[in-house]
Image 1 (cartoon, rainbow, N blue to C red):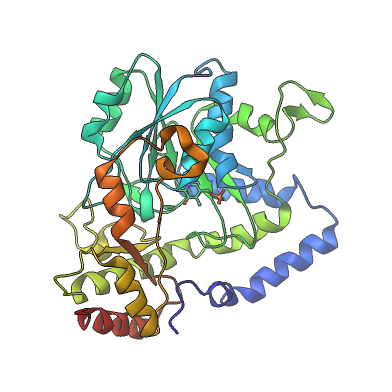
Image 2: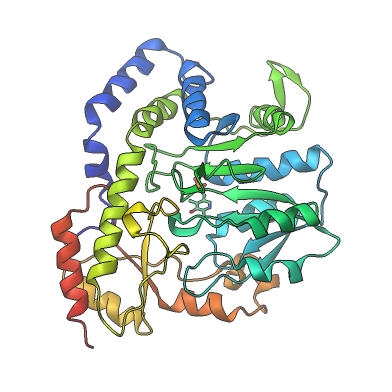
Amino acid sequence: MIKFLDLQNINAKYAAELKQVAAEVIDSGWFLMGERLSSFENKLAQYTGAKHAIGVANGLDALRLILKAYIDLGIMKEGDEVIVPANTYIASVLAITDNRLVPVLVEPKNASFNLDIDLIESHITPKTKAIMVVHLYGQVIWSEQLTALAQKHNLKIIEDNAQAIGAEWNGIKTGNLGDAAGFSFYPGKNLGALGDAGAVTTNDDVLAKHIRALGNYGSNKKYVNEFQGLNSRLDELQAGFLEVKLKYIDAENQYRRHLAAKYLNGIQNPKIALPVPENTGLATENNKEHVWHLFVIRCSERDQLQEYLTANGVQTLIHYPIPPNKQLAYKEMNGLDYAITNAIHNEVLSLPISPVTTEEEVERIISILNAYSN
Ligand SMILES: *Cc1c(COP(=O)(O)O)cnc(C)c1O
């Protein structure tokens, strides 16, 4: 069986360094808010180019804390609207509703799966305060038109960068494009911890200071609580692990681009639609706008194709089977209908792509797909 994601193998490559970190942290007796956290935060800030990086407990918290801080700072208030792509993972939407803000879902583009920037303006109302862009499947969603729109309507742009660490737009890394960004280091993400972890990046000094306090009980000084905060900290072990793995992220992302190019050149089956990178002017391996967190194909007989791949020894997943507005958790949105989003959720299938997926495996998957006729 070709595994979709072999986390054991992915981390085995770095086992010696990771075990060294674990031993040092255990011996130090210092587990939270220590040197490893500051060191990783500095490295992440340097890597993205953003002025501040703040480690938090997970990716959902990163997004929740950004919005909570904007509310505390008087930039948004309960009932305000945040634009978000309709086909995102539910965490983007949960961060909005958890803060009693209102998600306004906007359709993606059919070919790239990313938010259709042309559709944003018609959804802007006097209550709109932010656009949460999601660099979905690892591909940057950004344009000059987007920043002009945000400027014109005085909106914050928040990046959900859970899936696209290392991607670039015009030489600027994701996480340093908008007003603030949330990262997830969930084990399966391109930069994965060995447990839950996340971060916020921003160039905004006031926002950074506030988020840092909010994630630590609303406190800048022990037992002095200025705000009603949460407990959302990135521990020393995970920070140490992430610092090790951050050194290898560019090489791993480049290998993902190599595998993606192989899939794009090799899969030729009229029943299967391939992902279309937004910036088609560049060859895939040189296209820094994509880090291929997922390689997502489409097929109108998706479930049959998935069964066929399973029968042929290829494990696949669906990202995602049900859009947020069709989830029971959002009954109030169940009546909304988004044609493009619905079609995407019915037709997408994610193929294996990871730092330990081999070229031979990709070649085998390509021939299996090309032989699919139903
Ligand atoms: C993974 C993910 C999140 C949430 O990250 P966690 O670390 O699991 O909380 C948010 N948004 C997107 C798009 C994601 O893929």
